[in-house]
Length: 265
Image (cartoon, rainbow, N blue to C red; front, side, top):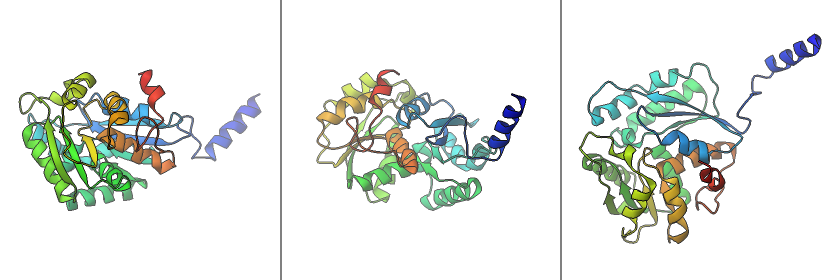
């Protein structure tokens, strides 16, 4: 028995890619310090044989704008919180930072992290762009849970990347620096979107990784003439397709197969 155990240890030591958990993929996630939504939604959508490890983006600033800037500036430090874990891919679940960052600056940061970690580093904003390309959607209707100034930055970001925003639904976000996005419920999102005119858009985007989106997508997608996307849906799709497991399904024209897991959440 002792000899058998020793042999097993030797086998494990000689196979560094053999994992106790995450045979279907090991993914790292960076998400803002107060975001209660990104991790649960990514865990629901990623393949059930995968594993998800998360680290929190933190900032001591009292303003939302500065916190979003700090998250981007400190990416190297936040990635370091994962130590020497070898991931299949890393995700950045904070679209607000991308909306406030010069694209060239963000590209340099992403390239540096990919070179340092040896794995793809995918921002939620980049995942949305990739999804729009796959779906051949050049126009979007935007549902924004952000303060008005961040909604403006969001629209400007998409226009800068050649995506036309045909209509914008501004959800109540509370005071400018409050985390209104984190208090939203799926029912509130559905109620707000019910009368939203998308003005000929080719996709409907529920913005923000902190806004619950999966139950809303589950209701809206079957009745919608266009794909219904969210930041978390697109990020989960982009991560899963690294392992070739990102097919469409009844839940979404982009990425499905997670409905049963959502029902149990």
